[in-house]
Image (cartoon, rainbow, N blue to C red):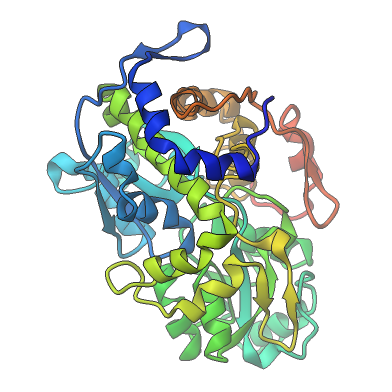
Length: 430
């Protein structure tokens, strides 16, 4: 594997026009000749959706910095979605019917859409995962009332508090953003690791990311899991605190992806690679420390997030004010977009296997579902390698990132997902 170091990324960005000329003079080909095409896109645009979350930044930056146009896709539209439910519905429509062709989505949504498990009338919508947009950068936040409870990485101190509410006949609303999505799975994992059954001991509710802070302010929830900038905004408004970041649960965990309707990709393979090249270049730009301030200023604008830079900048730089008297410089927990050589962006198939397995754990997907088959028909790491080659990168990734280890000592071996399930004492499999 050839490492693509930060200094190389800077050189690349400064000489991108030369790289594009090199790409235009060559034919792209996947290893083994599985796919070959000239780099000329079949279309010059598409419609991509995004939610106002910091991990959508590569799509916004690709548009704002002209990367889409540079790679032959000047007519790409990046359109705000009101919720993950709206994203699903617009994805089902497709741009031809007033919806979207793809965009910034929770990684498990590719599997949930493709199987039809969250679609209207359970109608499958074939989808592809093209690249991983980011790692880490989400939070598990709690009402300010519990700041002295001792809750943190260990959710256990909330068990008696929640039990007392239940005994008093009160609900225990705990919010996530979409059933079976990443925030749902992080919340369930965190609670279960602390001995709290997320099925019977709390009341999981769905709230769109931009509405989390306002809902906690009026007392509609005890805790929530969401991406930034909403955890930092919660702290800045002194409404609640961050018990833990998701990077502390699972360091370098995958989060959002660039997901596209399979029909669009199949009809436009050259445009797909061009689109990916633009987003990958934006990911490199977003990862450079000297670009963090500008990135926060751009995505914070009214037309994108309409959020103050102060609610964005700290955590993308690794400065975490948890909101309960704890302030730490944790650069390793900052959101990552590219990595040293693209390993953050690359859509490892083994990581898809974890999400499918975890969705089996909670009953969103049937326990006998063919995990490997679903991964193989939805994950297009082959196109990522084609896009990387077009950018002049020399990388050679496989399918597996290896065994993953979580904060509670549990591990996931993608070669033996059943062992992971067997080790979980709290689950709701069907």
